Amino acid sequence: GAGGKDMTAERTHALLSASAAHRWLACPPSARLEEKLPELQSSYAAEGTLAHAIAELKARRAFLGLSEQEYKAKLQELQSDPLYDPEMLTHTDIYIDYITSIANGYPSQPHIATELRLDYSEWVPEGYGTGDCVILWGNTLHVIDFKYGKGVPVEAEENPQIMLYALGAYNAYKMIAAIDTVKMAIIQPRLRKEPSEWEISINDLLAWGENIRPIARKAYEGRGEFNPGEHCKFCRARFTCRARAASYLSLEDDYAYGRPLEMQDEYPDAPLLTREQIGAAIQRAEGLLEWVEDLKRWALAECLAGRPVPGWKAVEGRSVRQLSDPDAAYKALAANGYDINMFYERKPVTLTTAEKIVGKTQFEAICADYIIKPPGKPTLVPETDKRPAVTNVQSAAEVFGDIIETE
Image 1 (tube, rainbow, N blue to C red):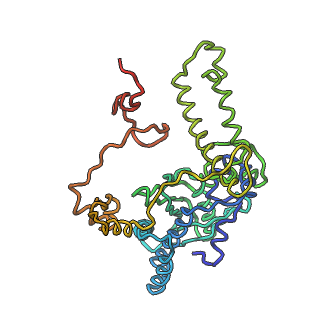
Image 2: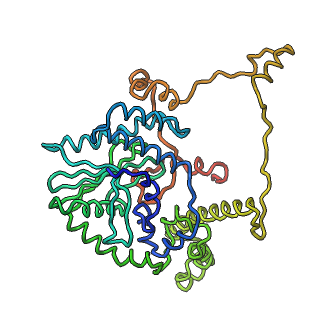
Image 3: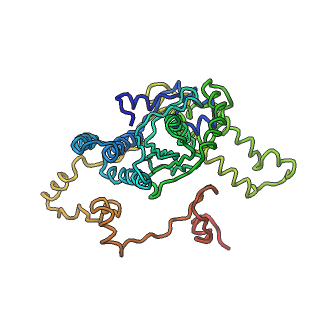
């Protein structure tokens, strides 16, 4: 693997990073725009970094000859991190099991590298990143990415991040192997049991690399069109980006009189939206709501830092009274003749908490007869969502409550 103490510094500094590729490929000038803005580090990112360190440690023990003694010492050090959670051991095992199953599938021991610096600068100016695990056997190259987040399931198919890693891995090994097939896998143990896998021929991967070359060049030079969309979600410029604002502020024009401009001549007297318009309006307004929340977060942070935003100010929110030491307070009440049991409730912990105490397998073995999974409440999602559609689960009156008058 790629050791070296500056690996974490390197991880963050490629302008055209693989993890942001879906963004700079869709909106090339965003990369240079973001570069000027401070990075917003979240506790989720720090948690992911810790889980990755545990995963890499386990991989080095399993495949790269790290001694049990060194492993235990290093693991203890990682476990002292305040963000450590025992679940990390279970989730990282899933990642190690996957690598093991790939390695065991070959007649002899394949070449395995972890935390490998991958250079894809032949296609993307100054492009490099860190691959979690790369396996090479014969003409087949495996690129495996471990994701600890539980926000959004990420598919391996046509995923630009893992494709850039694959180009970097191909670059690293093309001199020693006639690679013809690349197998990619994304492992997200907190979101799904099975990894997302995708296989591509080396020719198709290289053709994709050629395709993105001019876009990457534009992104590097800060040229090209701004293109707001889904990919804005983690962009550092998302709060103050003018193109994103323009895409939402033009909503009013599009829906003037409740119909798109191009339909005004066709249906001058249509006071009601069509089903198509409602579908399109929800789609755009979803992003609008997210954008407004982003603006409010940004404005609040500015006001708190003493940089006022005209028309707005930060104030102290509603406060709820609380006891600094409930046990001491209730003891004082008991000393004054009240029964102390009146102030305590005994209630069962949640299924998830019980599962953590007992361990998932053991809990299911003992409590299988009592575990039920009632149907979830109907919810509206985009058509691209993988879950099957449901109908007639609830009547309109149940969905809308009292606001519908029934005949």
